[in-house]
Image (cartoon, rainbow, N blue to C red):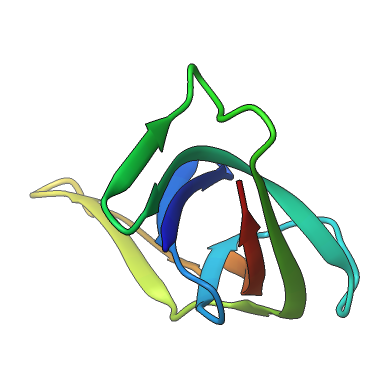
Length: 102
């Protein structure tokens, strides 16, 4: 059994006991949250929502918060001595999928 859930403007394919990294959520570590379920597949039977599946419930637990690897943003204009260097680390939240219910 798997489900397609949406959070942070992105969609993720999840099964029970999966650990996924999503955009940062404003929940404390240990909180249990519910995610929007767009599609559920159970042994070949697919139920798609419009836009979400009615009565479907995907429960997850917040494991941790963190920051991703640093990326370097370097902009320059040739022959003009214009250079700009920036770094960025995207914050994320790790979730563990506890259960998927139809």
